[in-house]
Image 1 (cartoon, one colour):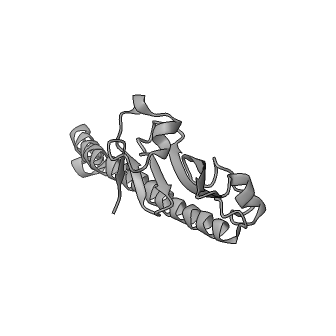
Image 2: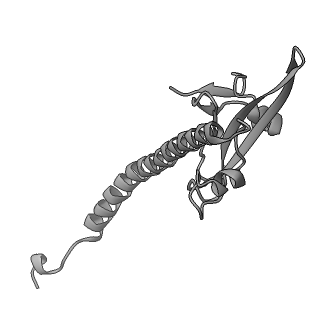
Length: 166
């Protein structure tokens, strides 16, 4: 048997395996970053769509208040079948409506606002938390996670916790 008929040597196979391992070590983190970025972009786009639905709901609502998830689903502003946990992949959605009653010169009025927050369902993917208010500006959570509660979730103007995205 001549040398050309024996096949590959162990050294040649190890070199090929190490090259494949180096390429995989470079490519896999980039693919994970691209997937994370796609999920976050979809989250921001869906938050904007939900924010537009809130504005449309308020415009068509006689009370001029923003709607809860159920009210917006019942009025067909959110398609039937979507829930707060399945409308955005890997995120859960929370809608906070605040209605303030005012009395000005003996006339009562109300002022309402909304905040929609999308929180990652798992820390595994290192996704960021996003929010949207009635100004339709998406924001990202930059506060310490130990400060996370319902009060800081709806304080979108507090730049200590929320950073506006451009």
